[in-house]
Length: 302
Image (cartoon, rainbow, N blue to C red; front, side, top):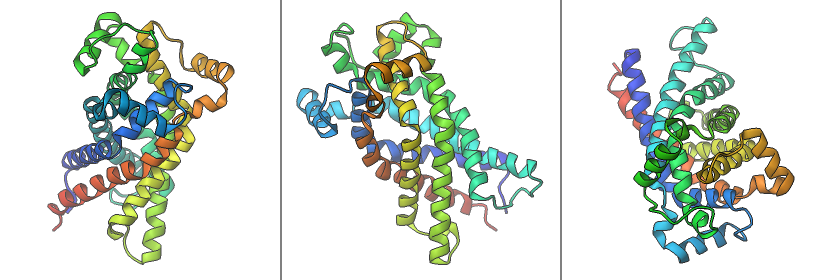
């Protein structure tokens, strides 16, 4: 027996939260390296230099800087994302004239994930702004761009409220949406296509392919997402961090300025740690989501 739509939404939201937490714990140090390299592309020789320099300067704590807002961001984003993903699948079924439990194609699921990402962007942007500023705080202070200050979540939140107001939390919303919509089409599309391939090869249902194929499918989905949207993410990080120094230019102006003054390569600074991080982090995300969702859905099986 299928659960009530409200219960289904709560299940998807809860499973997304579990997946989001798993994603952060498995990939935070590499995410910190990504943000530092995006914001200061000439400061480090590569991602190993970035990680070792951060460790030498601040210790292990420096690699987990921004973990609290990252947890809040990922749990909030993935809760809303997977709840909206379930809802958008139902909208696609309705508009296609299918019954409420019809199996959608991989492309239809990719479209549902793409639309769902618009809703999750509204939740993600404020928390990711705080996370990025915390992660790049040491470099901003060392380069003299900002005065030395407390680098805690609460101090960053207070600073944004005092200097920029509530709208300041949505610095970088345009590049966030520009990143999420095409990115999550690739993310869910690659994930579902990979699961389908595994299910066909193993001659079983997609839900029963096992842990390793789910982790690999999630990692592949994440890799496809980042390869497509990385320049937009770089612009987003730059806007969110550099807006600490005052009003920052918009998405298109920042994009063209980076490309013109620093070269196209600067838009891909930090891609290596991102691609290394994507398999464990997104594999953990989907494994957490699928396993917890399956356990909760079992309660409604007749």
